Length: 249
Ligand code: PGA
Image (cartoon, rainbow, N blue to C red; front, side):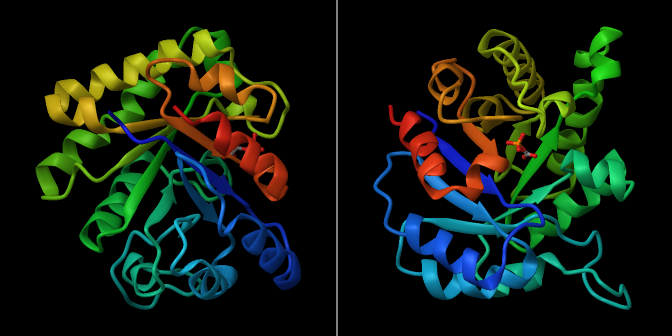
């Protein structure tokens, strides 16, 4: 049985004070699902001090494709590990869109994460235009294809999470229907199984894109949806916890 995971992507929001309040409010939450938060880099030390000894994990929103060196502004996966990050989000559509993270760069970032023993949450998803031109599955297929290379290059390739986030659903209030999301999740699981049967069984596949307290339970009822990557609603502790509890099974 795959453990459920509810991950909160704070994006570039908050202050030291609001970050502290949010962390305190969720630190001792009692949920069957694993909870994890992804604040901006600068608040990661706060996560380390506030969340240590609690069941809540934390991670970063990105990591460098390089191990170390003259890469101003970048943060390596090893540095994230040093701070206690369990996860790192890789290939979020906002990184793909605003920072030109290609599938190849996403693969390199995932390899850095895996070799630093930080679990990459690999984001995939189609744009509205791709959906309307019936290219959802080919686009997803191409994005998920990096997993074969991860298997070829990394001993710990099994330590990944996938997040299916249709780009048109992110921050728009328009969520995919549970049935539409399930179709893509099953497709992803099948693609993972082709790489490695065990990987297909064990990998958590999260849904992301306007997950809210009122649509979470219906999404989590789908057999291949193992949790959520939550943006906007993760900035409100009550909403985040309601979503986390909707995931109890
Ligand atoms: P949203 O963001 O929940 O605000 O749509 C999801 C995400 O970008 O991970």
